[in-house]
Image (tube, helix red, strand yellow):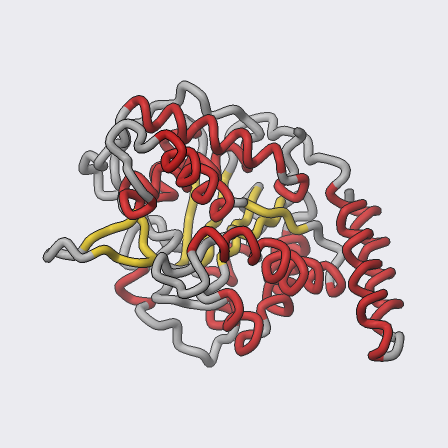
Length: 314
């Protein structure tokens, strides 16, 4: 795997020296080399993992806690989050992370640079800000993805580095499902992961949570509702007046995203896993019905295995 990523890096560096008129050729070559990298799946972990989560409120406190319950004894985790924070915000020591004190006021917080540089984690999950186009345009997303990947790999060469694919606001004018379909290739791969791979020898894999959410919503729509879930809005929070939150998941959405992390990190079919879990504070989460949970588990396993860059064998 490292040898393949080294060829990807060297090829990308050579292509970068070509003239601007050769951009289409360079992009095609880089994509070919990325596909070569992802053609060989990762091996399944041999036991429980220690995982570090870096990001913002689409990581939150409850989703990693749900993942730990799904994974079982021995799984451990730490995190650092902010309010809408980019990978650049977390990296730069002179840039204040918005909402840092409140977001990280819990026992699982560990400062990101020290934690990822410690070598204590089998997997590091990196989360870019929303909106992904703005992260690329204004926050140098591929550069800072590469910075974090290099830090993790320098501390521990066998650390697995993942980018958590999130989503955009449900009221996006281009259509929520349309954006999920379009953005994976347009932004997440071609403008974030592939350029990052030009800068580092570290393989970077994908946790396809946005793709899972879209697949589940389509399955629910096709069935006319499943186990009390009628539409995508049943995966998202509401305020005290019942108005829908257009970006933050509720407990059912957190469960779906935790399943996606579980399947990707552990290479295991989540079918049959418990669906009645606790939040990070120990209170019972609002669980999906057994019927909805079964569909979530099936969609997760189908989607994770359909994307070679997840590292999970088809």
